[in-house]
Length: 221
Image (cartoon, rainbow, N blue to C red; front, top):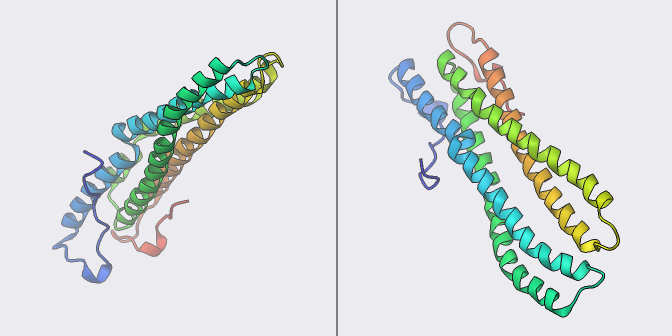
């Protein structure tokens, strides 16, 4: 579903709930949880996550041409001018990519809050089990872990492998690449681990008397 499609609204307050029976409430809950789960961890969301990451790296790479040219011990005016020409579109790509990334994180927070609200409305074994999304959670986890590991390795390898003849611009560029990898990977890890932990706690909880009370339900981290 397109990101422009409105999110499922939060469940109505207890005093305004008017479902004819529990089955109707569970049906609406299942629809909301399935849609919110796709918005949070679905394949389309993963593609956008990678797209914003690639845009960040592309923008920084174009700016890095200027950094390397300025930091080179034997830089010449033509190389510096070429670096300036590539840095301009680099900034034009990097700034919107940062804004889109921040907006995506804020939207994820809204989606997560609504998912928790619907999840705490009631309990239903099959619906709650689907919420775990083990395959998608594993994809997010492995991909984000690979980003963090690569960023951490570059953070040590780039300064150690660059000589004085290469210039400090190359170090600045490499550290920027490592930082983008590290921060992006951390956001993905936090999302995957937080969602899976909440889903596991949700399915592990067993309501008493066929109906659950909100005071006994698991809360998100």
